[in-house]
Image (cartoon, rainbow, N blue to C red; front, side, top):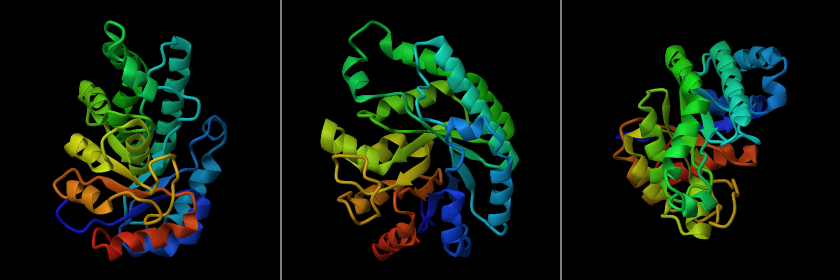
Length: 272
């Protein structure tokens, strides 16, 4: 990224109503978070789609959504669970098609426990790859045809290379990498992972999405930017050499602090 990047945010439609002027003042990317739960995806989501189209009239940024993740594991060893996860991904793609959404965030299968046990059994690393392919292959192929990209977000990941290699194994333009800064900082502070900027260095140009949240290295805080102790200058320095133009999505718990978070990075001279 050579120019000062424009920040976007993750919001529900209610949050969009509160931050609409800020969202529309520049071509800010938006990640909708109304279509996460099974109840919504299996229900009548058309009224939400209609409301989104109304609120986003005039929006010039890229539109994404957080995909289903609660209770789901894209690398489950149980074929019945894989079938459920695959169905949820298809439902998410249905929503994406209805709203011309071009990016869907999904969660990494790698856990802290897995990090210490991947080499404890023969072929365990390959088994994770195979299970993920069995879960996501059909959805990734459909996403390619639909002009949509799944981005795989770190959750408990200790070694970012594991997730990168999984994405590389798909060899598809419809599966890329996401970094959640708070998750990476938790892994750094609590499990001994590398610092947040190292996650960006490892991802390189496979990186197409970032959740920006601040934290203390102990828990998944989703604090406003500037309220924790993430080294933002180091992180954005790593981003400056990445040319894949990842979406910079402020994802914090208190949505009333989205604009203040953007102002914090602007004051640091890192983004606008």
